[in-house]
Length: 375
Ligand SMILES: Nc1ncnc2c1ncn2[C@@H]1O[C@H](COP(=O)(O)OP(=O)(O)OP(=O)(O)O)[C@@H](O)[C@H]1O
Ligand code: SF4
Ligand SMILES: [Mg+2]
Image (cartoon, rainbow, N blue to C red):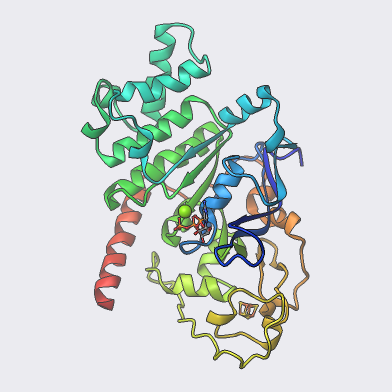
């Protein structure tokens, strides 16, 4: 494999003071991950609130520095890039955040947000080139330029603002886009359009995507590989179809149990995690599985050490002692089990863009009916 575009190597990020500071939070612990630019991939990161998803995104973007370990861009530590490499990094890796409104300056017309990268990176020599670039990027996200140019941010819908952010990323022809909850603040009806725009960038322009979400349903629909986080640690990872349809780690089983079914013939076999009474498993050691207090399968060994990554199937790993019969795999090799690492050529398309809209609508409807049934 060639040098990865981005690599996190045994990265830990701690916020707060010293070891005995009660406000100290380990947001991400000993995590390794690689993105290969030659093999454009779509990887989802899921986990409940506070599990470290945004922290990982910020580490990969160089917005925060790791407490331990390192993040490399083309094999070079992000913290000491030359100004030339830094400029290329700022082109190669783009981010789309949850709330696009925060990115817009309310006093400038929308054109400004698209013009700025063109100017900063000298992307166009003439006015015609500038216009062509903007038109092409807007077209790729399904927006007609006359719909939005000349208008102010508050005059657009949330969905339009978010799609313009996708178009803006495309202007720079990045190799990787990290999208952190890009659709959690837009109406269900717009979710498919925005996710569809992002996927088109992957399929048509060969851009890798990291899609961060709370929502297993959209992760299942758009990605090829998935990583499930629990309290800053990787619980399970691998082929999205296998992980979501047949979760291994008890935390993933809990997550899957709380989502609606996209396929009526394939019910999600959910179960409520019940945990075990404190002390029943024996004394808690220095290292332990972070899920012990919610895990219905917890065993004495789970409070004595933290589970390594078990390579349970060709395209998946689980950090759980239930799979201790399987061989272990070092965290630094984790992404080698991904489908994207093992295929040649483009993503096997399991997404029909036309169907995505309808599918997301169906799942959103069943989601709301599931929650109203719960009430
Ligand atoms: N700047 C910070 N200072 C202190 N603690 C922080 C900081 N940023 C994140 N944390 C803590 O790190 C942990 C992980 O936060 P992070 O934002 O990465 O979670 P997340 O998975 O993105 O959650 P959400 O789904 O709510 O966005 C949380 O406990 C959070 O409170
Ligand atoms: S290691 Fe033990 S406590 Fe942790 S998820 Fe697996 S069975 Fe549950
Ligand atoms: Mg977050």
